[in-house]
Image 1 (cartoon, helix red, strand yellow):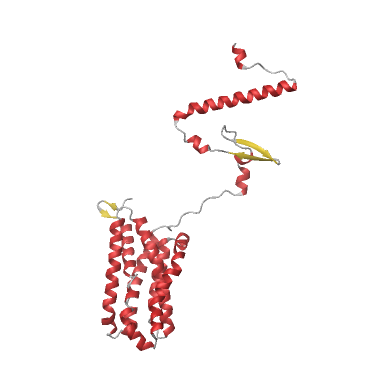
Image 2 (cartoon, rainbow, N blue to C red):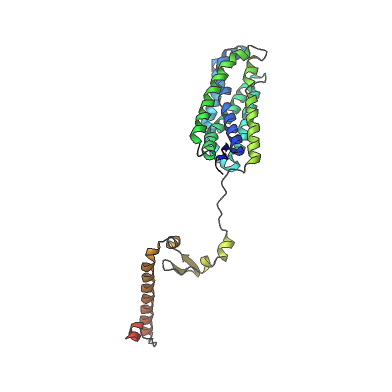
Length: 288
């Protein structure tokens, strides 16, 4: 089914588009909201400049460390499932920074960094796979939402921290859109099949032994059957190419087969003459 049905966007694609946009909303606020609040965080927690810099740098370090694992997990568990887990992990990491103990500030930054790393890798792939016609338009929306959400989080950080929320609440409010995005991806997981490729089918030893081709061989003009140590080994050469050949090549193949049969008859005649066995005349001699 195309991306549009009866002039309207397919409901499944509409939900997927909403999931992509909601996920894009959450990829930058947890990072950009921290910068304006660094001074207040240092004053409240007693962190020095190195500690505050580590809190800000942990997500970026996680991008580089964990991004290489994302394709493997996406193939194993499915893209929608991994993105759902990423949204939940992002919300958990944001909420961890709400806890009063300073170690939770570092732990939350690491968890949300891993979640954003997974989403950064998977979302463009989901966009290209699911919107092959409108991929450029959806990608433009995705990039625009990234910029707007990053700017909004940075601009709202100080005003939110000056309310009863404080700097911890100003950081924690961004768990709300992450949970909303998780709900959207949970619905997608229920509606859509798992998007991982099926493993290749490999014939087992029992199936191989039951195969007449593997045991006896294929007496094909382009193949041969040889016996080594009592085991029949079948060699098939370009059998599929033979089937796909155009009709114009049938005549050379027939000539090749006739020549092969004639050569086999000639060798059988020579062997019979050496053994002193009576032989039948050649077909050319009968015709003459």
